[in-house]
Amino acid sequence: MRLVVIAVGRLKQGPERELAARYRARFEEMGRKLGFRGLSIHEIPESRARDAATRMAEESAAICAQIPEKSVLVVLDEGGKSMDSAAFARHLGSWRDRGIENTIFAIGGADGLSPELRRKAVVKLAFGAATWPHQMVRVMLLEQIYRAATILAGHPYHRA
Image 1 (tube, rainbow, N blue to C red):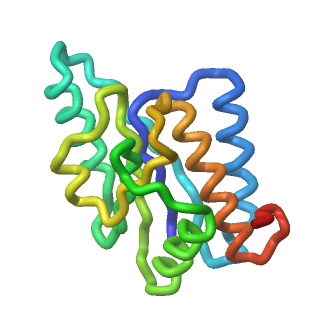
Image 2 (cartoon, helix red, strand yellow):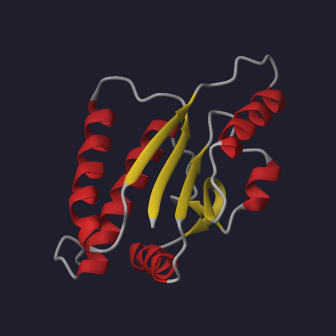
C-alpha cells in the first residue's frame, strides 16, 4: 500500500519542513519492511479566490483530482474523530492487509475542506479539539504515520 499526503500550501524552509522530512525518511526506511510501498507528499497551491467558500471548493477539487481509484481517503478535520496511535496503526495495518492500493491523507488550507470531500472520507481524523496550522498538522500526521509503522513492527519507539 502506498501512502499519499495531499496538502494545501507549501512547507517553507524551516523547522517544520525539517521535521516533516525526518519523519518521512524514518517511515520510508521502516515502511518497506512492513509492506508499504512508500510515502509521497503532493502540495496543492492555495486558492486565490476572494471568498472562503470558493477557496475551499477550488482547493478540494484540486485534492480530488490527485486521488487515484481504489484509495482509502482520510481527511484531517478539526471536527473529526480523535484517535490514539494504536488505533491509527490498526487502521493502516488493516488497509494494507486488505490490499488497499493507496491511503490518501488530505489536509486542507486555512478554510478547511469542502463538505463534499469530507463526505467521501472513510476516516475524519482530528488531532484534538484545537485548531492547528496546516504546517503543524502535516508534521504531526507524518509523525503518527511513522509511529504507526513502529507499532506494527513492534519497535520500542511507541511506549504505551
